[in-house]
Length: 154
Image (cartoon, rainbow, N blue to C red; front, side, top):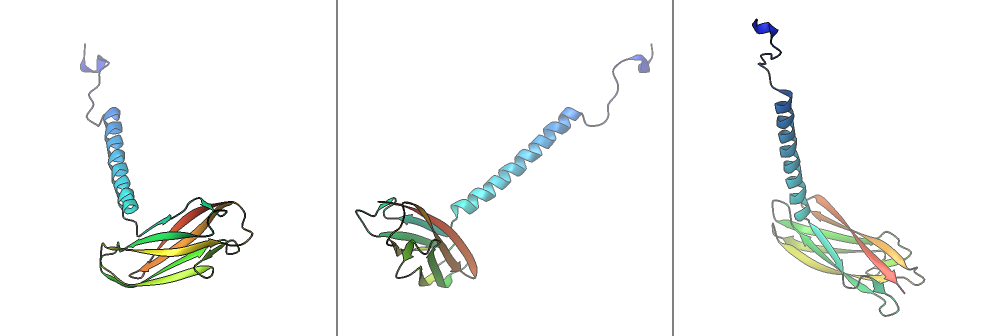
């Protein structure tokens, strides 16, 4: 009866089960790190938007206000921050006195915000449905964008 007659072998390498657990742990750590980065960027939004009336019942009211909150998420104070709100369907929605409206904020300190209001008016003959407005803000030479959706009903 020799050592080589036994069915048990000496194994000096890593067991495949252990390797699977190590791989699973590494993948879990990578997933958690990526999730933290995603949540950090999602919670640190430069633009937030909400409509005063959504859905907008045009039989009761012919316009609504779009409230835009612009936050300086960059590393330094921002000067000359320009915000542009425009309707994708320019034949159905007016913003301000035309198809787009621009406003400029002279200064936003790092981590601070400003709230601006934009007049949104459905044009004559608009169909019921949902419409998209594009919001762009240029903060310290970085462009941030957001979509705002409004539902129009009769």
